[in-house]
Image (cartoon, rainbow, N blue to C red):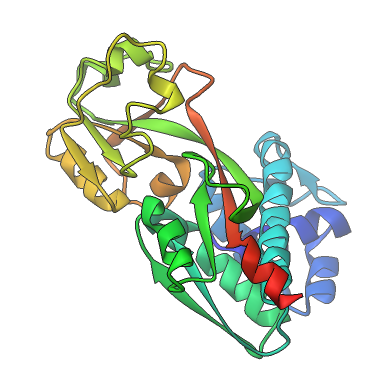
Length: 282
């Protein structure tokens, strides 16, 4: 999903028409129409009633609208955090990110940041989420995207929350659970061969998701990249567990995606930095 599609859709809604949105965004009207159509294809539903004057939201459009606005706010928050940490008008900064965030979130962030700060170069370093804090301590990255669990020392690191996402179950279409509608219970997952991303997070016995169980499930496979998980599930080697952003950047056609029936089946993701770095910069 391109952030340009989202911002164009929001402009059409705010200005109640394609022509007005095109004027405000300095796009041609066909470009505005193409952006909205691309977003609708991505989401699989029409978002606008084009033949109403002014343009009106469909039911799907009304459902997506608050999420679209939240996406834009997240980008703004991340951009502000980068600017606050670096304090730079020109120069460079090194951003660390784990695989799914690097693919699903960072491109929109960098595109937006480059428009606002064209003289700042951002270098991207991709690493496992649980390696990024050490990368910051050793100077390999200056800021990084990472879930808030496991927690980091508040004396060493500062952070700003960016988004919250649910964990999902990924099933081969022939798996028995694929025939059932609705969320999957934790106790059902515990007895299955699980395939997980994010060593040290879901794949940790200390994760809150497993507290209700009398034992920690033994993962069949632990992988770093979301598409690796998808292909292992596609091969019938187990049941996948991963986050929403990972699924957004993966080819999941032919597979079944289910929610997990637990309040703890979610996580917060933040941008992090060394507090000493900020203090020295000020």
